[in-house]
Length: 227
Image 1 (spheres, rainbow, N blue to C red):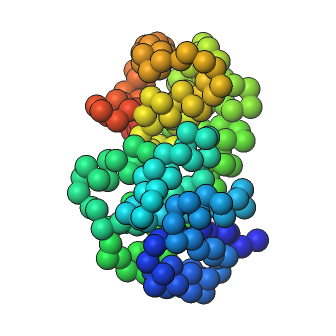
Image 2 (image 1 turned 120 degrees about the vertical axis):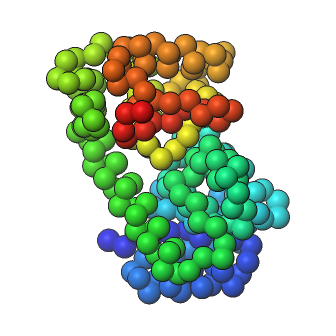
C-alpha cells in the first residue's frame, strides 16, 4: 500500500515539484498552501508531513506544536530557509522528526523521507513488543523494564514517560508535550511534576540514567548511547 504524504508550503511551485517527484517515487501526495488548510486535510492515513516553517497565518512551528499537544505523532520534516542552530533546536523542540534547510535537492528530500518513514515503521513495530537499547529493555506488552536483565520497578507514569521518550530518540519533548501525552486530561499537572517524575525515573535507571538528558530551555530527550 502506498504511503500518503502531506506537503504543506505556501509556495505553489514547491508543492507542485515535491508532489510530482514524490508521486513518481510511489507515494500518494496531498498538498496544502497553509497550515490552516493542512489541518483540515490531515487524516490518519497520512504517514508523514513535509512542512514549511514560514507561512502566512499559522507558522509550521505552530502547526507542529498544535499537533503534538493533541497527541498526534505523525512524523514531520520541516522545510525552511531558517537554518541556524537555534532554528533547528526550535524545530525539534516542537516535535520535528527531521529538518531540511532550503534550498534543498530532490535527492536529499527523497532520502530524508525514506529514512523518517523507515524509522517510524520500525518504531511502530517495536512498540508492539519491545525495545533493547544499550542494555535497557522495554517490553511494551508486559509493561516491564529491565536493565542488564534485572527488572526495574517503575510506576505506570514512569513507564509511560520512558516509553514516550525512548520511542522518539530524535525528538526533544518539552515538559508541556510530556504532560499532554502522559497525563492527557488530568488537570492541575505542572511542569515541576514532570521534573520530579523524571528525576525519580533516572534514579531507578541507575547506570543507564544518562540515556535521558535535559536540553536546557527546551525539555527532555532520549539518547541511544550512554553519555
